[in-house]
Image 1 (spheres, protein in one colour):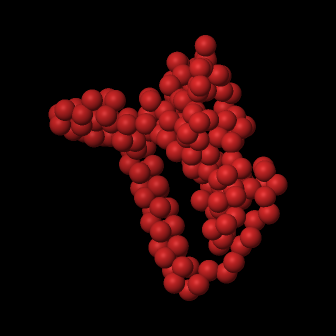
Image 2: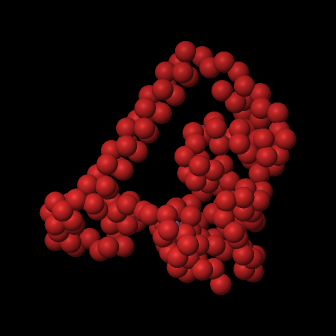
Length: 170
Ligand SMILES: [Zn+2]
């Protein structure tokens, strides 16, 4: 695993505008930067990066985080992979040490839970959006329960499509 000191160095070096800017074209707006969100389909930008706070936040879909979690989400990397990616960008040598047995076990449990969760959520979102039954029964159920389209989207029940060409930053 990557030692604590290296992780601290990576976070200290990571400039969120530079890291996010490698994937998304950001426009300066006052103290912040703006773009169309890379995580959901939108026409007007609601994705904001704050260099002062070192965070990003989308006011459309609610996704937010720091430079490292952005890389994780955007590039579908594990935390360690994202750390290494950012380290490489800033020429930081990554010190790794062997994990103890206990750490390996805990990590495996967590990673497999995340894989299972991710797969299940994707599967159900697909069923909900792309099958006749999903659209009639599933969506009907949500409507009956009073969930708005926005709520369904926010909690990722609805599949997010990446159709970035529809988005035109001003
Ligand atoms: Zn978004």
